[in-house]
Length: 567
Image (cartoon, rainbow, N blue to C red):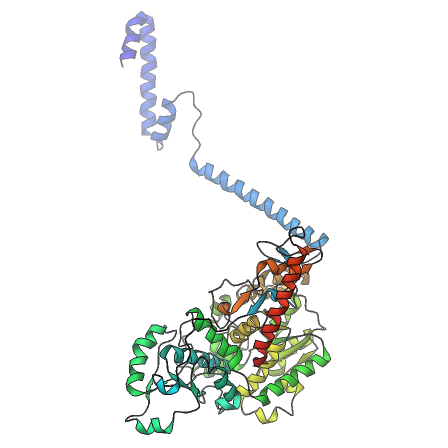
């Protein structure tokens, strides 16, 4: 107002009237602006004369979103075109990525498997076994489940006996599970070898001595420990009872010991699982006979653990398009497990928890570039849906064999015993060049771990979570696109040595403590053309390479001697 009054005083008569008129007009315009719906915004714009009218934020945001959409559309087309041209003009090879090198994935064998070996020897500080009469008592074990679930229980039973400083009684196998197999330990495993091989670890006897049983006032104390129990639990909860009662039985013993243990206890697990638990001579002989018959037909073959039996499908809670008949049949089987929760079939498939159908397994293998001349050994029991379910897989791989096709006469005596039949499949799968799992069950885990320990033989796990959506869209793409996407899905699921970081996953599947890597300076012993892996041609001296090859050969001989027990 000071500036306005000064202007009025200095303006004279006519100028003052003109100024007054201008001021009156400004005041009227100001009042109109304050009464409008967007008074504040327009008033602000009016008071800053010379500026352009402000643009609403909604318009700005809309323009930005439109620009982002245009950029995304353009870059998407460019990326798609680049990928198409690269697939068209570059040799179609998929790669295993590593920090130091890139190599094509050989679908039959990993190039890096020879750099790793199983190592489960006792360390210098491993406590010697206690003598039976000085032990803290006798440990009875009742296992649970099928062959491989019981195998995990037996393995952990030896470790628990070591923790408790107890004498282990040869474990009792499960006769009441879904399979109703009456086999005893000695019918499946070489019991004398089991006892003698572990003599430097844990005292093992076939039965509790009669003198001890007669001296007991009460029958053996029976208890069930929680799953994944730590060693401290056994020392605090089981040991006092064992010292008091002398004989304790642990029931339903499967996965009752923690996954992560002390290094020496983990190595004991490996000695039990991969060396002490040897099948009986008749089972080993028949298994090797089936392998020999496969080898006479082909130099290399794939073994597929199909796991598409009714019990597996019922347990998974998945649906495969069989209508009400399938739902009722699998629902009745599922009732045998009282503690199973209600599951959504669609959600389970999306989560990758559903086993692939035989047809999907075939599509996976063909998508990975195994051709239809490949020989397939299928390890399986009764397939749900029978021959109709198996037909698509046989059409994709005509060279299709099972143990029944290769040894029908020899198997007749084993037909009532599912665990012994499973032992034959276990042997053939272990000897195969490539092993393909179809679920994350016990046999898949145990065999995957064994094959890693015995030289990292190729083991392929379907990435079911990603593959499920790919199979659903199979009819919407050509074969080349489908195959390329299968390979993308399977990156990290092809059984390469360093797919899983040490300490991750189930120990029975990833026994990292028991797998050693050969010294890196000797990796030059393996050549890839004219280039050395991890050591350049200029940095690798000839004497280092020769010395490295000598060490590799020496380690191989030592491992062969140590592993001969499991053959």
